[in-house]
Length: 324
Image (cartoon, rainbow, N blue to C red; front, side, top):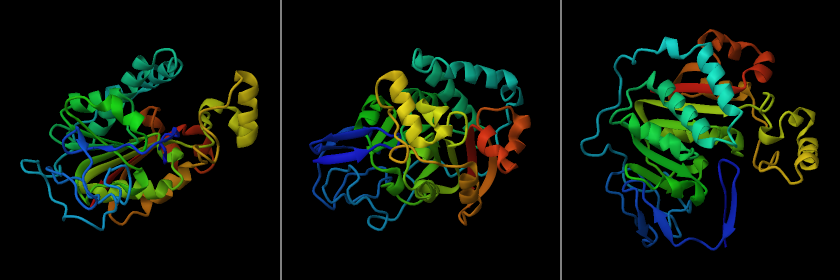
């Protein structure tokens, strides 16, 4: 039996799949013998003891030395793209929070807006055209489209194959793997991006450090997550989570008649703003260039520097690091 826990809290149990997904070709490929894999673009570093590429022994200690693909542009080290000041004010924040209210009823609208806003924010730090973007936690297909529309080569990673399957579109590459042990070589992507996954990982700092490892020197690491004490920290059990994890589950069950998708301390963990800031500032191989509340206007950036208050008021922390 094969069992995997998605970075976003989904669970799957069933027989071991007998195919793997190639991030280099974006196609399903037949199983290869253990210790071998097809990697024409020089991205993946995975020997996969089961030969399936579904996590296996996907370690960075085996395989060829990382090198850019032929024809790939050098890491972006020039001036940053001009910031869209007019797109980072109160009007944007109001639009995002209104979209949150229709996430279940109109997911296309919600995720489309969130994806386009995320690409805009990433583009403030790196020109995406021609760059390889790794999405750890494989956001909805709207993220793949938004990054591709910006001219990026999009590589999705998720532990749940069901999250990967909808992304099998032209120009999108996908890999089934755990974010805490990325089967990619050192310095193999230009941008490592992860949206709302950190709080679903048992070892979130390990996941984040892996993102730094696979990013090229001069490249960008973007990490965003909802912290536990924020108004949405318990996700669908909010705001009951402020009363405690188990009580939140009981109250949710009483109100809705079924268990929540996310179980506290099983698929959703008590992360904090301080935790992410501490990790970011401890990185020897990357420099923290921006920490801000993701959904708030620019003039509220300083909120993340205020202890205690930031844990309740930040809502979602957005971190940007540049690889040294």
